[in-house]
Image (cartoon, rainbow over all chains, first blue to last red; front, side, top):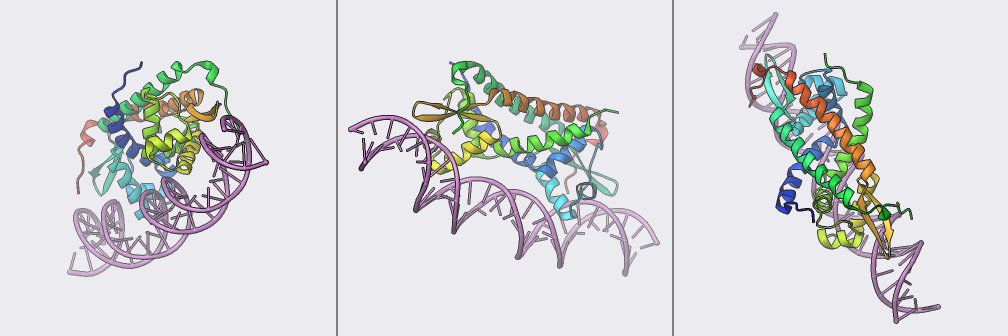
Length: 121
Length: 121
DNA sequence: AAAGTATATAAGCATATTCTTATATACTTA
DNA sequence: TAAGTATATAAGAATATGCTTATATACTTT
Protein backbone atom coordinates (compact mmCIF):
# COMPACT_ATOMS: atom_id res chain seq x y z
CA UNK A 1 0.00 0.00 0.00
CA UNK A 2 1.05 3.56 -0.79
CA UNK A 3 2.22 5.19 2.43
CA UNK A 4 1.31 8.83 2.84
CA UNK A 5 1.46 10.90 6.01
CA UNK A 6 -2.19 11.69 6.75
CA UNK A 7 -1.36 14.49 9.22
CA UNK A 8 0.79 16.14 6.59
CA UNK A 9 -2.12 15.96 4.13
CA UNK A 10 -4.42 17.61 6.63
CA UNK A 11 -2.00 20.46 7.38
CA UNK A 12 -1.19 21.00 3.74
CA UNK A 13 -4.91 21.05 2.95
CA UNK A 14 -5.50 24.07 5.13
CA UNK A 15 -2.51 25.85 3.67
CA UNK A 16 -3.51 24.99 0.10
CA UNK A 17 -7.12 26.02 0.69
CA UNK A 18 -6.04 29.63 1.13
CA UNK A 19 -3.81 29.46 -1.95
CA UNK A 20 -6.56 27.97 -4.11
CA UNK A 21 -9.14 30.44 -2.80
CA UNK A 22 -6.80 33.34 -3.64
CA UNK A 23 -6.20 32.01 -7.17
CA UNK A 24 -9.85 30.99 -7.65
CA UNK A 25 -10.91 34.44 -8.77
CA UNK A 26 -10.59 35.51 -12.37
CA UNK A 27 -9.37 39.04 -11.65
CA UNK A 28 -6.64 37.85 -9.32
CA UNK A 29 -5.67 34.96 -11.58
CA UNK A 30 -5.44 37.20 -14.67
CA UNK A 31 -3.27 39.62 -12.72
CA UNK A 32 -0.96 36.81 -11.66
CA UNK A 33 -0.74 35.74 -15.32
CA UNK A 34 0.14 39.29 -16.36
CA UNK A 35 2.99 39.25 -13.89
CA UNK A 36 4.01 35.69 -14.78
CA UNK A 37 3.97 36.41 -18.51
CA UNK A 38 6.51 39.18 -18.12
CA UNK A 39 4.05 41.74 -19.45
CA UNK A 40 4.74 43.68 -16.26
CA UNK A 41 7.19 42.89 -13.51
CA UNK A 42 5.44 44.66 -10.64
CA UNK A 43 1.99 46.07 -10.01
CA UNK A 44 0.66 48.87 -7.81
CA UNK A 45 -2.92 49.25 -6.61
CA UNK A 46 -3.43 52.00 -9.17
CA UNK A 47 -2.00 49.80 -11.94
CA UNK A 48 -4.29 46.90 -11.10
CA UNK A 49 -7.35 49.13 -10.91
CA UNK A 50 -6.57 50.59 -14.36
CA UNK A 51 -5.62 47.29 -16.03
CA UNK A 52 -8.46 45.17 -14.68
CA UNK A 53 -11.11 47.89 -14.81
CA UNK A 54 -11.63 47.93 -11.05
CA UNK A 55 -12.04 50.71 -8.54
CA UNK A 56 -9.04 51.57 -6.36
CA UNK A 57 -10.47 49.94 -3.19
CA UNK A 58 -11.38 46.75 -5.11
CA UNK A 59 -7.82 46.49 -6.44
CA UNK A 60 -6.43 47.15 -2.97
CA UNK A 61 -8.59 44.37 -1.53
CA UNK A 62 -7.54 41.89 -4.23
CA UNK A 63 -3.86 42.66 -3.70
CA UNK A 64 -4.32 42.25 0.05
CA UNK A 65 -5.73 38.76 -0.53
CA UNK A 66 -2.81 37.84 -2.80
CA UNK A 67 -0.39 39.21 -0.20
CA UNK A 68 -2.06 37.36 2.71
CA UNK A 69 -1.93 34.13 0.69
CA UNK A 70 1.79 34.79 0.16
CA UNK A 71 1.52 34.88 -3.59
CA UNK A 72 2.68 38.48 -3.79
CA UNK A 73 4.49 40.73 -1.38
CA UNK A 74 4.58 44.48 -1.05
CA UNK A 75 7.60 46.69 -1.50
CA UNK A 76 7.61 50.45 -1.41
CA UNK A 77 9.43 52.08 -4.32
CA UNK A 78 9.19 55.86 -4.65
CA UNK A 79 5.58 56.99 -4.46
CA UNK A 80 4.14 53.53 -5.03
CA UNK A 81 3.73 50.27 -3.18
CA UNK A 82 4.56 47.63 -5.73
CA UNK A 83 3.35 44.06 -5.44
CA UNK A 84 5.67 41.40 -6.83
CA UNK A 85 5.92 37.63 -6.54
CA UNK A 86 6.80 36.24 -3.12
CA UNK A 87 9.40 33.87 -4.50
CA UNK A 88 10.26 31.84 -1.40
CA UNK A 89 6.61 31.34 -0.49
CA UNK A 90 5.73 30.46 -4.09
CA UNK A 91 8.40 27.78 -4.14
CA UNK A 92 6.74 26.29 -1.05
CA UNK A 93 3.28 26.58 -2.60
CA UNK A 94 4.54 24.76 -5.68
CA UNK A 95 6.02 22.01 -3.52
CA UNK A 96 2.65 21.48 -1.82
CA UNK A 97 0.84 21.37 -5.14
CA UNK A 98 3.42 18.95 -6.51
CA UNK A 99 3.01 16.78 -3.41
CA UNK A 100 -0.78 16.70 -3.84
CA UNK A 101 -0.71 16.04 -7.57
CA UNK A 102 2.15 13.60 -7.10
CA UNK A 103 0.10 11.46 -4.67
CA UNK A 104 -2.98 11.89 -6.79
CA UNK A 105 -1.51 10.92 -10.15
CA UNK A 106 0.38 8.03 -8.56
CA UNK A 107 -2.96 6.87 -7.17
CA UNK A 108 -4.53 7.01 -10.65
CA UNK A 109 -1.98 4.52 -11.93
CA UNK A 110 -3.01 2.05 -9.25
CA UNK A 111 -6.70 1.98 -10.24
CA UNK A 112 -7.51 -0.89 -12.58
CA UNK A 113 -8.47 0.13 -16.14
CA UNK A 114 -11.70 -1.94 -16.10
CA UNK A 115 -13.13 0.46 -13.53
CA UNK A 116 -12.55 3.47 -15.70
CA UNK A 117 -15.59 3.75 -17.98
CA UNK A 118 -17.55 6.93 -17.23
CA UNK A 119 -21.04 6.66 -15.77
CA UNK A 120 -23.61 9.07 -17.16
CA UNK A 121 -27.05 8.98 -15.61
CA UNK B 1 12.41 39.57 -22.84
CA UNK B 2 10.59 36.44 -21.77
CA UNK B 3 8.09 35.57 -24.51
CA UNK B 4 4.79 34.11 -23.34
CA UNK B 5 1.61 33.65 -25.36
CA UNK B 6 -0.84 36.10 -23.78
CA UNK B 7 -3.91 34.49 -25.38
CA UNK B 8 -2.88 31.12 -23.93
CA UNK B 9 -2.58 32.73 -20.48
CA UNK B 10 -6.07 34.17 -20.77
CA UNK B 11 -7.62 30.84 -21.84
CA UNK B 12 -5.75 28.87 -19.21
CA UNK B 13 -6.83 31.41 -16.59
CA UNK B 14 -10.49 30.67 -17.16
CA UNK B 15 -9.85 26.93 -17.07
CA UNK B 16 -7.70 27.18 -13.94
CA UNK B 17 -10.21 29.43 -12.20
CA UNK B 18 -12.73 26.57 -12.09
CA UNK B 19 -10.07 24.12 -10.88
CA UNK B 20 -8.88 26.46 -8.12
CA UNK B 21 -12.46 27.27 -7.08
CA UNK B 22 -13.25 23.56 -6.83
CA UNK B 23 -10.13 22.90 -4.72
CA UNK B 24 -10.55 26.09 -2.67
CA UNK B 25 -12.98 24.49 -0.24
CA UNK B 26 -11.72 22.58 2.78
CA UNK B 27 -14.26 19.74 2.56
CA UNK B 28 -13.53 19.10 -1.10
CA UNK B 29 -9.78 19.47 -0.64
CA UNK B 30 -9.71 17.07 2.32
CA UNK B 31 -11.69 14.54 0.30
CA UNK B 32 -9.23 14.82 -2.58
CA UNK B 33 -6.39 14.26 -0.08
CA UNK B 34 -8.14 11.17 1.29
CA UNK B 35 -8.28 9.76 -2.20
CA UNK B 36 -4.75 10.89 -3.05
CA UNK B 37 -3.29 9.43 0.15
CA UNK B 38 -4.55 5.99 -0.73
CA UNK B 39 -6.75 5.89 2.36
CA UNK B 40 -9.62 5.13 -0.02
CA UNK B 41 -9.51 4.55 -3.74
CA UNK B 42 -13.06 5.60 -4.58
CA UNK B 43 -15.84 7.52 -2.84
CA UNK B 44 -19.62 7.45 -3.09
CA UNK B 45 -21.98 10.24 -2.03
CA UNK B 46 -22.88 8.21 1.06
CA UNK B 47 -19.18 7.69 1.89
CA UNK B 48 -18.39 11.38 1.62
CA UNK B 49 -21.39 12.35 3.73
CA UNK B 50 -20.32 9.92 6.47
CA UNK B 51 -16.59 10.71 6.37
CA UNK B 52 -16.88 14.49 6.21
CA UNK B 53 -19.91 14.76 8.50
CA UNK B 54 -22.14 16.22 5.81
CA UNK B 55 -25.72 15.55 4.79
CA UNK B 56 -26.28 13.44 1.67
CA UNK B 57 -27.34 16.41 -0.51
CA UNK B 58 -24.31 18.45 0.62
CA UNK B 59 -21.97 15.59 -0.32
CA UNK B 60 -23.76 15.16 -3.65
CA UNK B 61 -23.32 18.87 -4.41
CA UNK B 62 -19.60 18.79 -3.52
CA UNK B 63 -18.99 15.74 -5.70
CA UNK B 64 -20.85 17.40 -8.56
CA UNK B 65 -18.51 20.40 -8.34
CA UNK B 66 -15.45 18.11 -8.35
CA UNK B 67 -16.90 16.23 -11.34
CA UNK B 68 -17.74 19.42 -13.28
CA UNK B 69 -14.20 20.70 -12.65
CA UNK B 70 -12.92 17.37 -14.05
CA UNK B 71 -11.10 16.44 -10.88
CA UNK B 72 -13.22 13.35 -10.32
CA UNK B 73 -15.45 11.34 -12.60
CA UNK B 74 -18.39 9.10 -11.82
CA UNK B 75 -18.59 5.37 -12.45
CA UNK B 76 -21.45 3.13 -11.46
CA UNK B 77 -20.39 -0.03 -9.66
CA UNK B 78 -23.11 -2.20 -8.17
CA UNK B 79 -25.51 -0.15 -6.09
CA UNK B 80 -23.19 2.85 -5.85
CA UNK B 81 -21.91 5.63 -8.02
CA UNK B 82 -18.25 5.89 -7.18
CA UNK B 83 -16.23 9.01 -7.78
CA UNK B 84 -12.57 8.50 -8.66
CA UNK B 85 -9.82 10.68 -10.08
CA UNK B 86 -10.26 11.82 -13.68
CA UNK B 87 -6.71 10.92 -14.65
CA UNK B 88 -6.52 12.36 -18.16
CA UNK B 89 -8.09 15.66 -17.07
CA UNK B 90 -5.85 15.82 -13.98
CA UNK B 91 -2.76 15.42 -16.14
CA UNK B 92 -3.96 18.44 -18.14
CA UNK B 93 -4.73 20.40 -14.97
CA UNK B 94 -1.23 19.68 -13.71
CA UNK B 95 0.27 20.86 -17.01
CA UNK B 96 -1.60 24.15 -16.71
CA UNK B 97 -0.46 24.63 -13.12
CA UNK B 98 3.11 23.78 -14.10
CA UNK B 99 2.90 26.27 -16.98
CA UNK B 100 1.68 29.02 -14.62
CA UNK B 101 4.20 28.32 -11.88
CA UNK B 102 6.91 27.77 -14.48
CA UNK B 103 6.39 31.28 -15.92
CA UNK B 104 5.97 32.71 -12.47
CA UNK B 105 9.09 31.26 -10.85
CA UNK B 106 11.13 32.04 -13.95
CA UNK B 107 9.91 35.62 -13.58
CA UNK B 108 11.06 35.70 -9.94
CA UNK B 109 14.62 34.94 -11.01
CA UNK B 110 14.60 37.97 -13.29
CA UNK B 111 13.75 40.45 -10.53
CA UNK B 112 16.80 42.10 -9.07
CA UNK B 113 17.58 41.21 -5.43
CA UNK B 114 17.82 44.86 -4.35
CA UNK B 115 14.08 45.23 -4.96
CA UNK B 116 13.19 42.35 -2.68
CA UNK B 117 12.99 43.86 0.80
CA UNK B 118 9.46 43.58 2.18
CA UNK B 119 7.46 46.74 2.79
CA UNK B 120 5.43 46.81 5.98
CA UNK B 121 3.23 49.83 6.54
C1' DA C 1 -46.15 -4.35 -5.85
C1' DA C 2 -44.26 -2.22 -1.76
C1' DA C 3 -40.41 -0.90 0.91
C1' DG C 4 -35.70 0.23 1.15
C1' DT C 5 -31.31 2.29 -0.59
C1' DA C 6 -28.43 5.58 -3.34
C1' DT C 7 -28.33 9.69 -5.65
C1' DA C 8 -29.92 14.11 -7.53
C1' DT C 9 -32.30 18.33 -7.55
C1' DA C 10 -35.22 22.27 -6.01
C1' DA C 11 -35.98 25.95 -2.86
C1' DG C 12 -34.72 28.65 0.74
C1' DC C 13 -31.68 30.26 4.46
C1' DA C 14 -27.01 31.53 6.34
C1' DT C 15 -22.62 32.90 5.37
C1' DA C 16 -18.83 34.44 2.45
C1' DT C 17 -17.14 37.02 -1.31
C1' DT C 18 -16.84 41.01 -4.15
C1' DC C 19 -18.09 45.15 -5.17
C1' DT C 20 -19.46 50.07 -4.12
C1' DT C 21 -19.12 54.70 -1.74
C1' DA C 22 -17.20 57.27 1.85
C1' DT C 23 -13.46 58.35 4.50
C1' DA C 24 -8.77 57.98 6.68
C1' DT C 25 -3.68 57.90 6.52
C1' DA C 26 0.76 58.78 4.58
C1' DC C 27 3.39 61.10 1.71
C1' DT C 28 4.65 64.53 -1.95
C1' DT C 29 4.46 68.78 -4.35
C1' DA C 30 2.95 73.47 -5.38
C1' DT D 1 0.40 75.08 4.67
C1' DA D 2 -2.76 73.49 1.25
C1' DA D 3 -3.63 70.49 -2.50
C1' DG D 4 -2.70 66.36 -4.80
C1' DT D 5 -1.51 61.38 -5.10
C1' DA D 6 -1.34 56.50 -3.49
C1' DT D 7 -3.12 53.33 -0.52
C1' DA D 8 -6.04 51.30 3.10
C1' DT D 9 -10.12 50.51 5.58
C1' DA D 10 -15.03 50.78 7.05
C1' DA D 11 -19.74 49.96 6.01
C1' DG D 12 -23.14 48.34 3.30
C1' DA D 13 -25.23 46.31 -1.01
C1' DA D 14 -25.21 42.64 -4.52
C1' DT D 15 -23.94 38.23 -5.63
C1' DA D 16 -22.03 33.61 -4.86
C1' DT D 17 -21.35 29.66 -2.06
C1' DG D 18 -22.61 26.09 1.07
C1' DC D 19 -25.78 24.33 3.85
C1' DT D 20 -30.58 22.69 5.09
C1' DT D 21 -35.16 20.32 4.29
C1' DA D 22 -38.22 18.36 1.11
C1' DT D 23 -38.91 15.71 -2.70
C1' DA D 24 -37.92 13.13 -7.07
C1' DT D 25 -35.72 9.38 -9.70
C1' DA D 26 -33.53 4.99 -10.28
C1' DC D 27 -32.71 0.79 -8.74
C1' DT D 28 -32.84 -3.28 -5.51
C1' DT D 29 -34.85 -6.33 -2.31
C1' DT D 30 -38.60 -8.37 0.19
